[in-house]
Image (tube, rainbow over all chains, first blue to last red):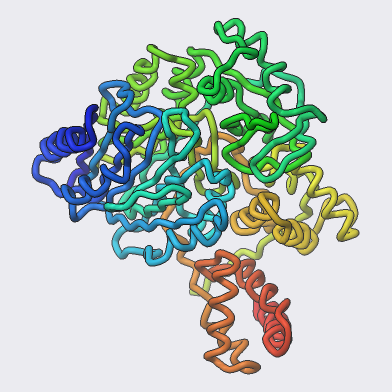
Length: 393
Length: 174
């Protein structure tokens, strides 16, 4: 049975958007029943209202959901809307949700994995999809805990939910349910491997900086000074060149500014990027995962060209990993790409689709991306594109 | 015809390899700091380390709170200090995943080894609890079995004593 991936996007009220995307998916699936449906929705279509509508429309499928900072399909960017994908073919999908992620990530991951089978006869390949609430502040820990509890041959892909850069509350969904402070894990069993590709386009722009005071994911001081002051000082000139005055940032601008200038941790010849999410009133910065005291990093930046190239490269890697023709893809793309590219963002989406042979894809703009392949020892990324490609058969 | 299984080569693990395994999560500098501190506390010198010493360092770090401990746990789960060093691809990953390992699960063997001291039911219960605590889903290789036995060996009373005995027995059987 060949794989079929249908995608759709819509705007408007929750019920109107749901009605529109369900009709499009049914048409795209041409009568096939999907085993997996992904629902990525802006804060204008609350996930708590949308998930029950999608679950009712596709009762036999595993429905995964996430709130977003932007949505897209192969046709382009969809702000304030809903982007969905439905996948049918030779797959078996199981999923669970864990709550209380901030307080007890290990327990939440255990809860999400409880009841998911480790093996399904006849489907030797396993890929996990993780969706998590990044405002819990432990994206890396959650990803590593999931990797530790899954077997070594399981690849992970996924994303951290967004909330249109409000940085107030993000949601993940499973079936007819949506929760904050939660993680959703799905295990996709397949007859041939799925393709996971990841790439970022950021380069260091500062001297090494040391975190001198931190508590979990809250970085209070860098080189002995308030973190927010250091961030603005280091990025001041670069931001000015982008037309941004770091000393006049409004409360709604800080998140976008921070996502343009992220922290790069040296890891071999490359840099692992960590996302600062929001400043606090005390001058600290909240990150998407823990940053221990003593961590040394360099502030990073990126150009539009690098952003388009890295999106294309991620899709290329996913396609190579697939080793076959792609039927479609789900994409987890950092919100920073949209901030940097602005109206050119569609070029990045088109580059990804082109690399995969012009196939349908659905994705959302995240506050963090997850990609952990066999042999990898870290899986939570920032500023990257993660492409999860499905084989044609 | 019986086929000889290749014996893993003993090799020395340089400190820089331990650092590079943790760097994808902690960054190079923080990884170096925590590894060096662990080697000082364990008084194992600055390397290269034999496999037992490397395991001790990773185990010590795995007991640390916060993200350092979690990063070390994933190293313990996914890295091996036998044979050649695992190739590291910091960011991005592109290696292929394969079908699940076919190594036979040694869970029943461990339960039987412990059963002599604490009975089969209790033995099964503590093995399952240790696997859950360590995030172990398959006991297909000796390293994982050792980790579970080491975990059980830290327990008080009869379980710990039996596990230490079972660990020695298991080592002799390899």
